[in-house]
Length: 253
Image (cartoon, rainbow, N blue to C red; front, top):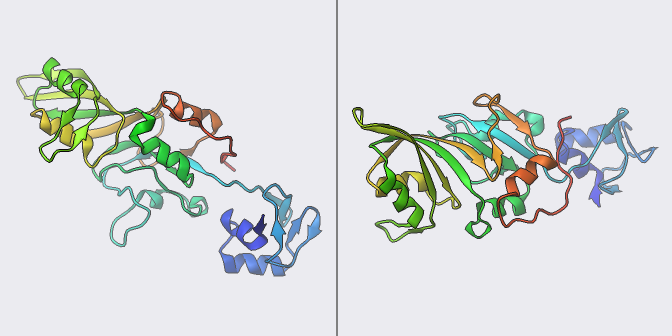
């Protein structure tokens, strides 16, 4: 059970002080009765109305964002724009954070949630959640490049990387460029860029297109986001060792 003020504040009805004023004014009913006490304990499935409008409690919230370049994968920064700045104020639920990070110049699929358990499972290598990226390379990737990635790499600093999959999309020997699709199951610091450097090429552009079996929607423009539902979450975990717990998921109001 939750205090009524926390229930309402967590659901972004207002700040804690604003919620107190709403409650004092008699604008809140709980299971059909006016409640004027912010300390009133409320079950998560209680019928709570504010000025006649239902407020449904949801513990976990999930967003899919098409991260644009130039935005930090962080919850806050005093000088630079973060991915949370792309959300509406009313959707910045308590403890919402990016699942892992994409570099400032990397674009594409990024998840935001306050479900710490799912975030850990999506990132931890033992759950084998595949993440797929498109990369533009300086240098011509070939079959030997793909074999090296598939065998697993040990970087110069001793970091051991699990095997990945590399698919060559385009080779341009005249321009010394290539385009690839690479899939990994880890998320170590600058991992794709370091892997590609270890096999003699350089990443010039990086875009994440898929996590698990969930693709970045083609109609979701950079900087835009959408809510995820239960079917979406099953796509995230479909190709992994994750057994998702039953839980309520956010739906667009």
